[in-house]
Length: 267
Length: 251
Image (cartoon, rainbow over all chains, first blue to last red):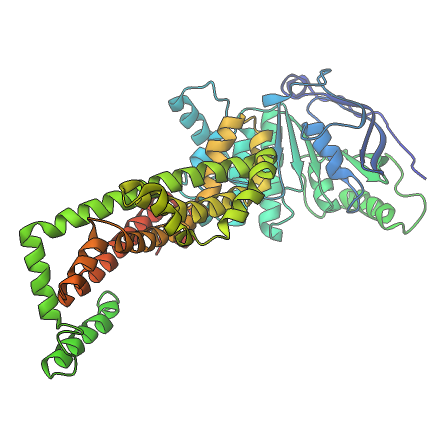
């Protein structure tokens, strides 16, 4: 029942392909003991694309992201970033569901965590401050993380992730713990910096609305395989409550909830 | 008002004590009046005897603490970071921990006589365990998610240690530190009372020989003051080092 509908994705413009990284997975499996979480995934993500991975809890979507981000190694198969299988270092950055800020470092020092250590101290501070300003937190450099709200903490985490100008940003349900309004603001912010910088973005989420609001392409992972590959060809910036978006969302939800057999027709 | 409130009960007790002595409820040979204790203090301070004893006791306390605490901290870190080290050492240390360190006094006197080593050994041994146990606990309770973040952001093992593990373990280390300071004074009092030729404990025991109850009471007060002072310093350090933690920041 695992139909893999890999289909043609429209070409992105040149700006994107120079600053984003292309991701390619070949026959990737991952087992934990006897349990096979991923069962042979083939996937190509062109440079600069915004991909959302959705699926039920435990379907393997987070495992897939961790493999791409280099936090985990596949049991078999290969994950290549720009054709290379190792040495991700500063090209890939990860944002987690929790902000994971160091509570004993002030906001600015937390952003500096994302910067290369070769840089001199003054340059690091300057660049970290610029990243903070970009996420709307200028002036909060000297604060302790404990005084920030959940949304502000996640903004700092975003600034930290973007500080080294990654070519691939992996986001593991980064907005799951935020309230509805903060969530929408953060989605807009992420979409904005993505358009601005042109990195490749992969977000794991179980919120299909969020996937449709953010992504060019939605992958539905089911039983360790990509069960559905849907292009979201809607204009940006995206309007919430758009009828086309609702149609895509409905189709994916139907498939997730197994309401009807077929799921949405790939566009 | 909040600043005065903690002093109300001690001052009240002092007044009661003085009154009880004045009206003959407390006999001077059993428990001298506060004024008599103050006179003894003045006498000892003027003769220089007090400072000599305080100095040697403080030196013993801090040196023993540094040795025992240092070893406890290093072993706690090592066993928290390396499972090999932990498997090798932890069960032995837990076995030794169950011996009350003061039970070793006869053995320590046999080994070292009443020299400085005896006191240092006992203090170091007493301080070792609270620091060791709490450092180990601190390292173990460092947030795994922060470690994973550090690795994902390319921190080297050294950076992970200094930026994530050490600061993460610090609150727990401070708990051990404050607990260890209490044990430090306790051990020193016992050791100096039993076998010493200088120090506050000796001063008290010597005064007992001559029935100088006022000096004995004063010696006890000196211990209390030194203990309180050590705790205040530890609290201050805590507030400076853990300023990021809202639990400590506003204490």
